[in-house]
Image (cartoon, rainbow, N blue to C red; front, side):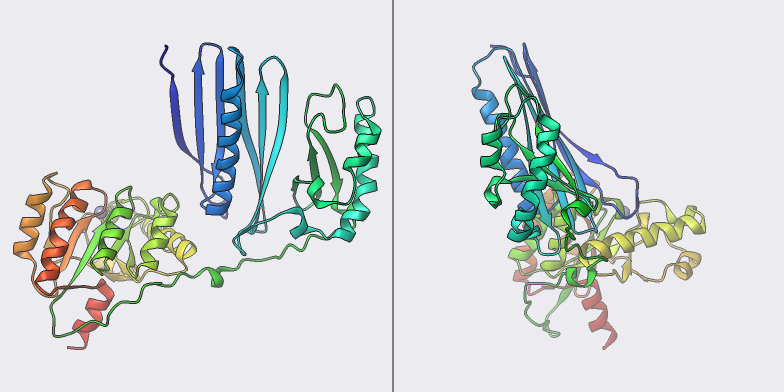
Length: 416
Ligand code: ZN
């Protein structure tokens, strides 16, 4: 059997407008003999929505695999709109071709504010649907006159929400989708009816404006109060988040530890859930520039942009505004100190965790060097850092160390 050429690519779709967010796209491209598959579907970082879309894609994929033809093609693509920063409308455009052509639209609706998947019933009421049905009928008759089976159309177009599972809207129009042979004959494409909101006499209760206040994340974990008689250290991690950060967060949680993460602004969107978890687990987030530029070597405009863009993106993602800054390459001068309106945080112990992949060596050096009130420099971008922490955390805990954030440590030191 020939090997499958199977590619799963995760790429970033970068949208132009500054108010829009970067979203992930999963692409599956597969070609073997005369079987061709091209799937693209979005990931919005909203779990319920993402899961529902993926479930639909998986189900279509499975159905396609079961088609016995040797020559067949599957295509899934998508479109979406986001209204008022709140309502996400997604439509999957599904195309299967074997002996016949088969077109389908599947739609998904999500309210970001209420963290809820929406159905038609959440958007219009029964009375509105009742008024809508005859208007829809008129449109469908006009559009598909040559293909319609009238009594089947009458059966479909009744004011029953279960008859309208697929719809899409923006602030002008509402579109309903029907299966190609639901009430037509010999028509292969998707059957749809688009109605302007004015014609519907419908004002979708779309709220205007943003709702940032409600999105502020708070630590959900309660920590034991800091015992000032016991030793404490502040673990700090630079350059992340990365694919290792989640494991590090879980490990810290296991030892009741919190740390300070000096993050790179341009990684925040990609690791949105990780960043939010940092806060929920009681960690602190600091600014480490937008793309790790050497800040003593850039113009003032560039400097301000590196700091502010990162502040904004962290604020938008977590609702928390960082107070700390760690200079890239540890490079700092008087000019930077004057320009950057954040507390500049260096370190007292450098684990050099990026220099070796030997996690034991990192842990041994750290364990023999660390003393009370130290700020430890590490990087959550390496596997060996996670492995070293697995050795360090239980040993340090045994010695009575408490793991606090930089701000907590500074506050305690300031009152002494
Ligand atoms: Zn760095």
